[in-house]
Amino acid sequence: MEAKLLAENVALRQQLAEAEARSDSLATNLNEATATPDFDNIELNDTLRDSTVVTPPDSAKALSIIVLGASGDLAKKKTFPALWGLFKEGLLPPQAKIIGYARSKLTNEEFTERVTARIPQDHPKLPEFRKLLSYFATPSYDSTEALSELSQKLIDTQEVEPAGANRLFYLALPPSVFVEVCTAIKKGGISKTGWNRIIVEKPFGRDTASSGELSRGLANLFEENQLYRIDHYLGKEMVQNLMVLRFANSLFEPIWNRTHINNIKITFKEDIGTQGRGGYFDKYGIIRDVMQNHLMQMLSIVAMEPPVSLAAEDVRDEKVKVLRSTMPISLEDIVVGQFVRNGDNEGYLEDPGVPNDSVTPTFAQAVMHINNTRWAGVPFIVKCGKGLSERKAEIRIQFKQSPHSLFPSASPNELVIRVQPNEAIYINMTNKKPGLSDELTNADLDLSYTEKFQPSYTPDAYERLIWDAIRGDHNLFVRSDELAAAWRIFTPILNQLESDRIAPIKYPFGSRGPQEAYHQAIRAGWEDTYLKKKAQQEAKM
Image (cartoon, rainbow, N blue to C red; front, side, top):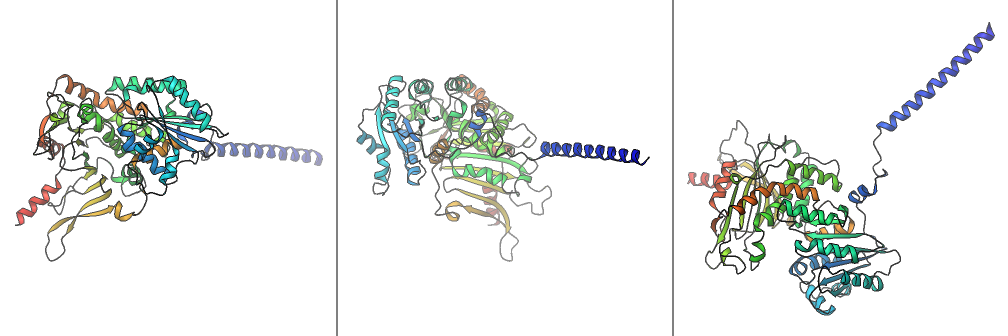
């Protein structure tokens, strides 16, 4: 009997041990399934890795920065000063070389003098920067033979590092030649021992069809993670700070919605005309030149949902969702204008390159609507123009008044992000005027960048964007589906304005634009706090 009980006891212990082992195994599997993934070590496929992971500049490999259109205005004013800024701050890889590529017949010395003319000539680092520069003349930008010759020259003289060579092609060229030039680059200009990246400038087409054709043409030649579509407004300090302002400060997220915000106004104003570039501007107009790109980029960052992470694809996914939720603009939603002579300031039609009967707008204001839960019913008033009273770009978020205010004369609170000039963030608030009076006054809680952060280094927008392209960071560049979503909003109204030749409203150079735009904003729900304050002051006099 004892032997039988002993055997049963041993069997029960063995069964218990097996059950515990199965339980431990189940717990281990459950923990593995529910544990937070190690995103630093997670395996991604090559395409996803290339498009989301930022790689530091490879100091072991040679880097050739080839600026196509190097003798043009854009390269002289923006591209080469930006490259100088990066070099001056020690941000270019030590093996970097800069090659100008254009049709002008220039010697290396003539080219160097031209592109460094805007740099302080007594700067101690200028002689070293000059050594990075060289020039290659081509009969045409789409010449495969010329690019093959340049490629071999780079291999023989500059890209001699055994680790290989990377190449960054900056197309400071009209969009009409992008596909032909990129075809020649693909056939004769790319590096076989490193990465190849292409920077292209706006405008990316004229409408949905032409933009799609351009995107497909480039996609047939290069992967999306090799293409960097520049909208230089994304490189501006305050535009980059928008995401930090929204998502790093818990004060704002709970009130960043239709419950608390009455309207959002995004403004871009220039106090200059076309300055002899009327022939180019007349082909595009202010809507294509500014509203469809610069202002839509700011709108998408202001209105987007919090992204899953700060990875480029996660951020751009949310921007695309906002643009896809934005309703196309109708004729009732927009006011267009064109500046006329005012004193010594010429009107738009007086520019030698502009046809006498041009109906191209130099001013546009649109009331836009985003059809989602966060923003339903909130008007986004988007305004841009040339020949206006001042140079300014800002985002003005006007909050709703309390439904039962103890101070009915108080103005609505406003959060203002001034993009340029004199970058700043300020909140307009109502306060009691000091003293025995009960009079209310408006005052700003003001964060002016030049006062708070001086003498911090603030890079030019082009510096930041070229630096990001060298690092492989797509965060501040426009993706192809983002581009398509933005054109979907504007193509119908552009077609209607042009097919019906709708005449823009005339406004004097140096004014605030057409009065109709002011009245449209008021009807949309915007409150002119300056005018209200002025009226209150006059009433007390």
